Image (cartoon, rainbow, N blue to C red; front, top):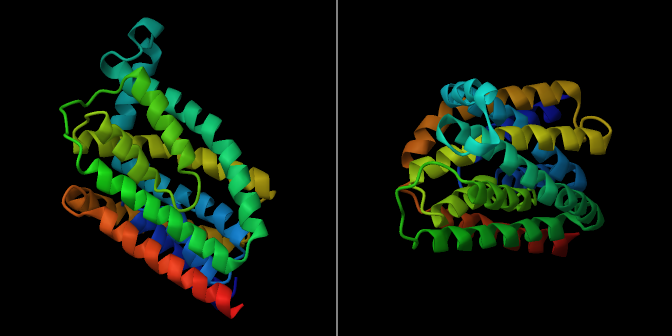
Length: 275
């Protein structure tokens, strides 16, 4: 691992550790950063998915009490009470994760193939367009009347799992789309973010396994650089999640999506013109 690779790994870990908790696409922004840093676009998509393992460790530690409660409920789980009491969370996670795989795996294979066929500039602009679409979804969700729900149902599991599968595309915010879907389902914002981030844990681990399997190993990164990037994203993610969760209801993140998306579209056009 040379110095340049070390710097990129550290910066990638910082980006992932911060933006994972925002309703903007961590995968899209990290793919954008890696592409600008010289990573092949196809490898950038795979690497951005793989590096989510770092913030998965942060989320696991942050939500350890919720996870422990869900695991304690598993031995007493019965189909007739799948969404009653403490059984609701493990049922939600399992069903939603299954739906994520059904929707997300075909899209992932398509996204990697597409990224390998286009130039870096076109890829950057494509990410920008998806970021703007994410911003539109965020803007619409802010006009929805919030309800008082906090316990998931089977319909919520299917809907949110499918939406999370779509978010495997670079530029589509996983946390933004799943949280917005839950807000549309009349969940209070704190409950929506909690359910969204709990669901990110199996989804990110599954995406990492899929990435390593598809790439036949670490996607375009050395073991040393991967260890550094994962370590940095874990530490930064844990330090920032609590602070970001406190402000997430107050900041209009659709503005951030529009800004980043617009810059990516302009930047991608410039890159394409210069190549």
